[in-house]
Amino acid sequence: MATVADIGYSAAINLTSAIIFLLAFAILRLQPFPPVASKPAKKLPLNAVTSIIDGLKKLYVERLKPLEATDRFNDFVSPLLTNSNFDAKPMVMLLGQYSTGKTSIALHFSPFVESYQT
Image 1 (tube, rainbow, N blue to C red):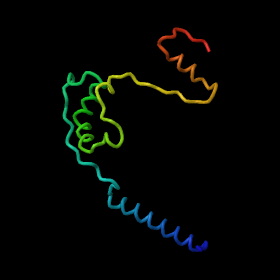
Image 2 (cartoon, one colour):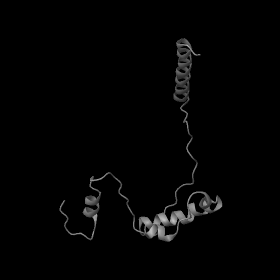
Image 3 (cartoon, one colour):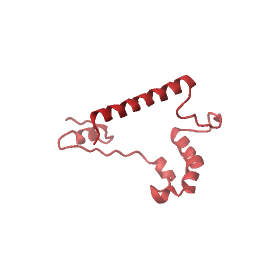
Image 4 (cartoon, rainbow, N blue to C red):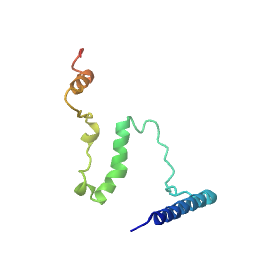
């Protein structure tokens, strides 16, 4: 069984090694995680993307979808995204206890109800 002295000794070793580690990084100006080498960003003309959704869709189709297909991502996590995933309106699910205002907030933001008094 470890005694209080043993625990104090191991804590001192851990603290000393952490300080040495931080000093080494400060003196050598090292970065714990080197920056990822990337290609310089290509400048797109302003009319190349008409909306944020179109830009996200284009990025997904050109960059992510080939990686997901290569790694068979759809077999393990979720199916590949389609155009309808980007074009669909977002959905929100409200969860909460009884009488916490779920219906009130839903009716407040509903475009079908002109005036709702709580």
